[in-house]
Length: 234
Image (cartoon, rainbow, N blue to C red; front, side, top):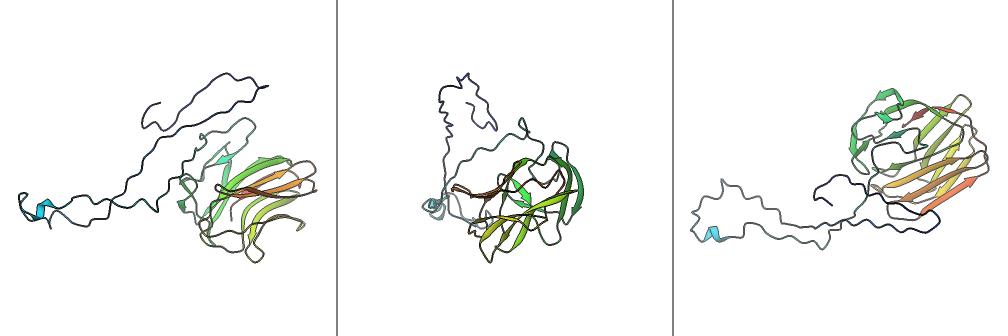
């Protein structure tokens, strides 16, 4: 294990019949110092003077500081995955999706790096080929709590969209016939929320979880809306 490494890989043979427990160990430390606005222009006294005997770095308090360690996935598609986006300063995705709308684009702090800041004037969309049965997940961090559409996928025969209703405190997965799958889930501004959508040949499910919390879900016996050809974030 090398100090300062940004990525690592450890491989070993396992027997799929037996249970295998893995553990990741990360060593870190935290330090705090008080803000000191003294400048060198203000330090006009001799080094041997009484004033120079001051403490040059004042210790701060760590009482309200907490570190949360997380492991980010490698920037690559895994087997069976069609597309992926980091949105870390760019609309470019993995799997060669074609960006066909790009207006009012800006980026701000997200899950691991920057993410797409979606405002009233934002238009971000890609041409994709997503089969009728699929699953996807993504992170959503609201700057404030309001009723909104977060994610939309459209095809020639229908559409699916994910949104939040601040009046009822529910996330919803809705199709072009206004049929909904809902999950009751209260949120607060700056809450990192993970959303998941799963469509099988006979069932549609919506998953919601906040960082470090339990997963809530809802489902309905709904058939696919068909192939999806456009993905929109607005």
